[in-house]
Length: 303
Image (cartoon, rainbow, N blue to C red; front, side):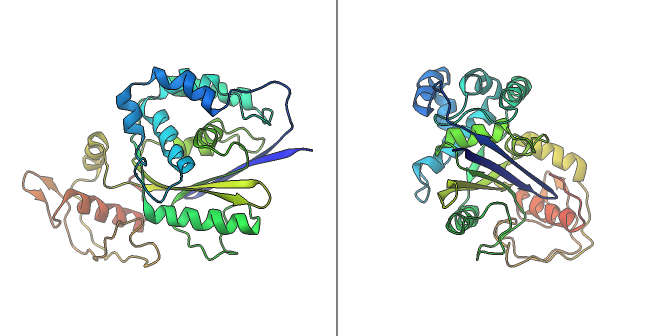
């Protein structure tokens, strides 16, 4: 009997989906425990600690915390991740390689070897609630895809990855998204989201699924609170001196998610970085939030 793994992605203005059939295989693959024993000793204690951004989050399961851990490892040191986990990962026990698995794993390793470190991904409870609702209700109804209309789950302006089936652990989920095997996924959309040079907050939830045993939903948004200095400098270099001519209003449904609780309307403020602060705003974060909202309102995205 054939088993199925399907990985789907929704990003703003972009939809990608893939599926591949896998049969029981003959040779064994290294499981997560084997890979951890082989690969983790090559990482520094500092990097391992930094990757655990979800370690103390009470609402996440052990496997959900692992999603943050392995995603952050690949972002902290892409070349080392290529030389360790990506090199030795050959799939999950009970499955054979999916369509273009070897080719895309090789391309992932080549890409990671050249990639600079990326900002860490942090947990966010609002996004977790979004992801958990869809993982739970979608799993109960046997849904696949990103359409939430059959559920009571709200959507939002976020990038979303969903995995159905496969290994029910953080390493397997992240490796599946990074490799992006699948006949209809040549664009490597999942990999692009996971390796985007942007500070992220994320909600991740794993729940049972009536058709695929389990599904994992990962919802991402831009993270204003952990903006690396080099991104902030690039941001201000391009947008310093912008005058907000339009009044910005916020959709109550997504307030507190995209704009991190920013409820004011802005009109006529001149955004200028100077030694005396950020004109019109008490902090640089609120200035960046307002400017981001303004540019998004005009359908121009600075990030």
